[in-house]
Amino acid sequence: MTLPNKTVVFRLSSIGDIVLSSALLRVMRQSAGKDARIDFVVRKEYAELVRSSHHLSIVHEYDVDSGFDGLKKLAKELYDEHYDLAVDIHDSIRTKFLRTTCRPKETVVIDKRKFERWLLVNMKRNAYDDELSVAERYIETVEKYGVKNDGKGLEIFIPDSILFDVSGKMGRLKLNRFEKVVGICPGAKHFTKRWQKEKFAEVAVRTANEFHAKIHLFGGADERADCAFVADEVSRGVSPDAVTNFAGEFSILETTAALEFCDVVITNDSGLMHLAAAKQKKIVAIFGSTVNEFGFYPYGTESIVIERKDLECRPCTHIGRKSCPKEHFKCLVDISADEVFEATKKMIQ
Image 1: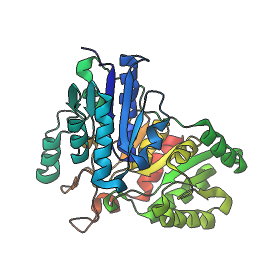
Image 2: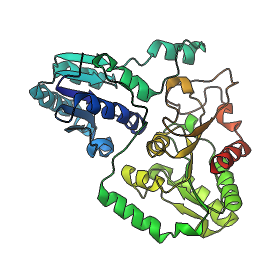
Image 3: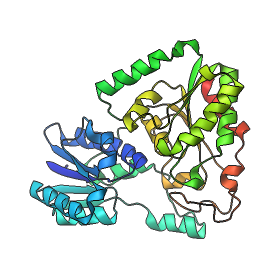
Image 4: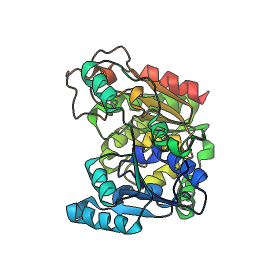
């Protein structure tokens, strides 16, 4: 069985999940051929992640602010396309509605291992018979059509205009004055995925001093404060020239282009971790309330994941929480700056 000629893929959000879909889109294009239609449905705020993909024909954008009326309008647009195949790698209420109402000839849906996930989170029983990355689970969804993983990892396509602009900004920083450039991403959407900013700052200062490294800080607008704290500590402990804070200054694609200039990236389990993986950067990843079994570890690149495997309460969630249900937050509090620095040192050397 081969891929039909006209396919639509559903993955509405979020940054990491969409970046992880890039391997699927590439191998689907390889399998279907250059003349086949492969379209993608995504939320408007994440569309830039796939808008320039060489593997897609059309990107359909859903504006959450348009509510159910906007969802119905999008469903009508998809219905009018008469797709042969719908590939739902999100399997949410919205994508279930869209894949049903667009009435494709065939539909395939990702196996999220929901039962295994529930057992691990709620009963602390590990029933996973594999530790596949989510990227590999996406490909698994269409393997009956002869689609196979090519082992080339993740990718992200950035317009030349953005690459040129970011390269200019990096040029003005005169990075050749430094031995290494280390990216630090201290943010994450959920509290139980965020390592303490004080420890990020300690690692940043030690790395800048020991390796004559330039520190680049990345994050969204809501992560400016944490990044500013780290930047201030590096400025005092090393020098103002040793750090640049890009938090809230760059778009998603601009951040990805800037990550290209880093030798190592130190990050929480976050969307920026997957962007760094898509650029095949060396990664030191700090995991709190989540675990590798869920499939969101750095994929297709050299990495070290630092976690507290011996905690009986872990994992307490598969996506992150607003607070620690045990109120001790040991999964991240017990990870020391020494551990992360040593992992960073190993990556640099």
